[in-house]
Structure formats: C-alpha cells, structure tokens
Length: 518
Ligand code: BG6
Image 1 (cartoon, protein in one colour):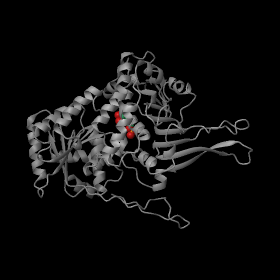
Image 2 (tube, helix red, strand yellow; image 1 turned 120 degrees about the vertical axis):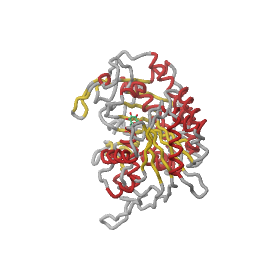
Image 3 (spheres, rainbow, N blue to C red; image 1 turned 60 degrees about the horizontal axis):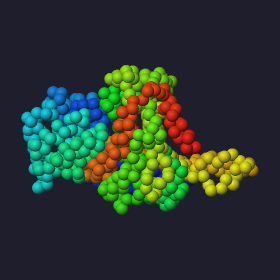
Image 4 (cartoon, rainbow, N blue to C red; image 1 turned 90 degrees about the vertical axis):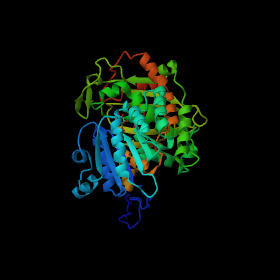
C-alpha cells in the first residue's frame, strides 16, 4: 500500500496538506480468486480493472491466481484478451504493458454453466492444480459471486456438494446485494449460504461501507471529544440524509422494476448511513462490536404501519426532464420498464429511532434517481440557542448544522453564524470546511477495492452480518408492502432534474423545517 509523503508549505512548516502517517503494513496471503460470472458485465467494468489496479499498486502477493468461471466459451488466452480489453476500457488511464504481461499470467478461465456437476469437477481439478501443496496450510480460495442473484443458491449448493466450501481449502465467499427482496427471501438465501459456509467466511458487500467518508463517520464521532457530548436529543434538532443521483436506471430496467428505490438504496446504503450516525460507541473496533451496535439501531427504528406510511413517507417516479442541459426520458420510457410501471424512483420519509439517545429527533431521509445532481450527504442540525438574544433587531438566526458530505466531494462542513463586520448585530452565516482530498492529497480509491482487500486480509468490519440484513428488511418490508398494495395514482410525479415529488417538501415543512443540501 502506498505511504503518503509529508510536504512542507512555503513558510517551511509541516502542514496537514499531506499526511505523514505510516499506514498499516499488511500482507495478503497467497490466494486463488474464483469469479463466477468472470466474463460478465460486473467483472469487466469493475472487478477485473480493479484487480489489475491493486496489482500495479504492489498490493497483491507474488502467488495468486484469478479464475474466471462463466458461460462464454474461451480458453485462458481468450480470457486474457477479454480482460485486457476490459482493463483498457474501464481501468485507470495509464496502462503499463509490462505490468499487464506479468498480471495476465495469473489469469485462467473455465467455461461452463453453473448448474452442471461436471463443471464443478473441472473447477475442483483447476483448484487442485493451482493451489498445489503449501507447507501444511490450506490454500486460501475466495469465491466472488458476480452473477445475478438467482444463481447464488445454485452455485453455493454445487460448491457445497463438491466439498469446495470448508474441507479442502480455506475459503471465503463474497456476495453483493440484493440479499433477497424481503426478510423471508433473505432468510432463505442466508440458510443456503450458512449451510455451506460459516458466518466468518461470508463477506456481504454494501459498497457504501467501502467509501472513505462513510468509514470516517465513526472516526469523526468517536475519535473527537467535541461533538459526541452534543450528539443526542438534547442538542440535535433533526438529522437529514440525502442520497441523490442524477443518473437514471442505466439499462437496468429489469432489475429496477423488481427493486425500486426502497430495495435499491434504502434497505442497504441509506440504513447503513443512519446506523453509523445514530449508533452507540462500540465496545471496540472489531467487526462484531460495530455490527452489534448497528443492529440495535435497525431494531430501534419505529415500525411503519399503514397510517405511518401515509403520514410520513412520500414516493415519486420521474417523468421526462432536463439534467445538465440535456433532455432525458421519463422512467416509463426507459428500456425494459412497463409503460404503466408503479415502481418508485424517489422516496422521502421521516424515521424515528426510539431509543434513549434519539427519542423525539426525526431522521429525514430522501433518495432518488434523476435528481438535479449527485450528492450523498448527512446533515446534523443542532437546536436553536435557548434565547433569541438578537431576535428583535437582527435577522432570524439560521440553525447550526454539520454536513458530512460523502460524494461527489468528501467534506465536513460546520455551519454557524458570526457577527457581520461593522454591523450592530447582524448575524452572517459562515462555514468551517474540511476537504479530504485537499487536506491529504490522496487518490480516490474505489470502495470495491478497499472491500476486496479487506476480504483478502480477513477483515469483516466493513461487511454486513446476516442479522443486520434481516433487521434492515424489517425496517422496510412494511413500507414496500404498503406501497405495493396501494399503487400510486399520480406517477410520474416529478420531472427529471428536480428534487423529487413536491410532497417531500411538504413532509418536512409541516414540521417547520426544510431540506438542507450544500
Ligand atoms: C447501487 C444501486 O447499489 O448503488 C444503484 O444499485 C446506484 O442503483 C448505486 O446507482 C449508487 O452508488 P454510488 O456509489 O454511485 O453512490
């Protein structure tokens, strides 16, 4: 892993312009990575370019193999050409031919469907060959499920019946959402996985947890003594979390029609953000301590019955509109979307966390596709001072708030009021800002990269545990059930390029508040 260098500013002082902290030195044991769907879209666009990038950074051990397993017929050489093209198209701008040649020697391919026994016998043979004998220790084998979710059980059952899960190798499995489409199906999937693997072998990805600023929420809260004393119902008025995307559904109509915004964003990424903001300090920084605290938050979120859903949630679906000066089609005109689709692409809602710390503090959440811009942001709004000392003679004071911006920039902003120069008592709002990239001059890493490396190192902290997934479904199941039983009559109800259905403004305004976005 790269070690950032310290620099000196023009005055000759060491600054935090770049950091001079020695990063943990870690080694990754030799491994074999089997990618199911190794020639598919996810592999070509994300996984393989990222693996090449990790390799060029010098983070992979000398002894590793990558086996692509997929339907298209080709041999190892054919696979290497496919991966080369993928790396060139989707990878980092610079492409080093020498590095590529070395990397490509580690690539292998097995073609076949995921159902047939014979293909798993081929896989066993390949693994035996690649894994060889290693001084008494079992070789690490990581399975990556880069396939549609209907294949998860098929592949896992086959791996299990060919004794490829626990017996011969030291295995781990990486799977990515969707983990079911409700609690019942998530539990069924979990049973299948748990029959084959132990919980400690299962790496469930929520890629938001690989984002540096998302991880920083815990550090910000628990490594500083300034804010934690204020982080409760006595000082915080409300919390707002926005996950806005300007993108539409990007040729994923089939998937999105089944998912909608709640299953796509709220059940996973949004609830993870809520948990990180709201959780109690964990007993330690180990994976399970943090995951225990998050589960408590999911369980404290007030259940949503029909009345609650009607009163405190708003759904929307985008119609045509303009984003960045370009006309974009409405959701119902996207590929593989029904002309009368009732799938929501936008949500705003008010959550209550019924625990000691947060009683009475609303958490407003909103997320959607085709909003004016991409921004993921947490706004913690503090209460007004107890007395309005300046109220008769000056402007109404704006509340203090703290913005934790996850993307597109990684920033922390504290907003407060100062006396306007030379005025008698006019208050002027100002910001105190911290910008990750400016401060540390670090390169941005893809969250998947961090997560993949963590899996190789055996660190489960940033992965989701099964009880967490179940509890997250418990939060949203009643909402989706309610919406599905009562189809919206006004879709599409917002134009692409606007901040969603107007009802979302009313939702927060009726509490005397408004959405805050930087
Ligand atoms: C994925 C969703 O999990 O997250 C996509 O399936 C969404 O619909 C994406 O676009 C957003 O991720 P990010 O990292 O771009 O905010």
